[in-house]
Image (cartoon, rainbow, N blue to C red; front, side, top):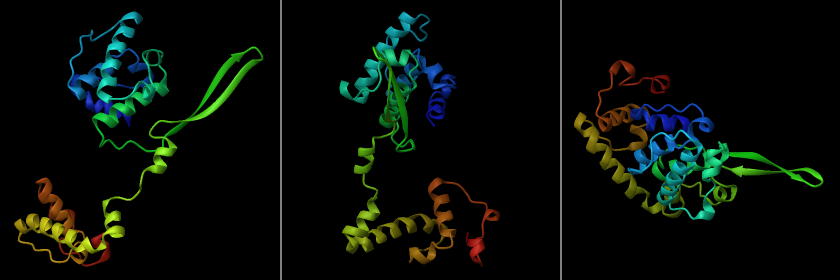
Length: 225
């Protein structure tokens, strides 16, 4: 998802990312992303060939990026060194933060987690510890988020307002399908066969639906489906 998002965003720049580890560590892609999404111009070289210049470039880019994201230093799960050393986990955290800030509509899968294993060389030998790292939201945050949407709230807390909401939607629907000489009085029954929904979408998106693609007057459940 992140690779496709980057490639779509930077298509006009003719940039193609194939590997998050191999293609982002030098700062080139991050530089273009920040310029494209944040409309910022940074005083750095487009291409940094040496490790010293790559580190300098990443430092400038991440400093600007952190200001855009408005995150405290304690919230940062990446650094110049971790990106430069191709640390995938840090790169993922950074890209998810960028996507959530600049393009919140991007359908990032929730509750993505990986198990990390840390190996430490001690006087008694190798010591390993494992932990679960949440990339797209911690378990606690996800549990705190309500699964109810606005209509769930409406049904549970203000059912008396439901008729008012239906009237508003009915007015909205008739405003558009009325151009086709149609009039909707009952959304539940008149939308059941799918025809009005198709015609409404066509009106909203400004295109003509080929009548051969669906049944204008469906005579069976199969034709409705």
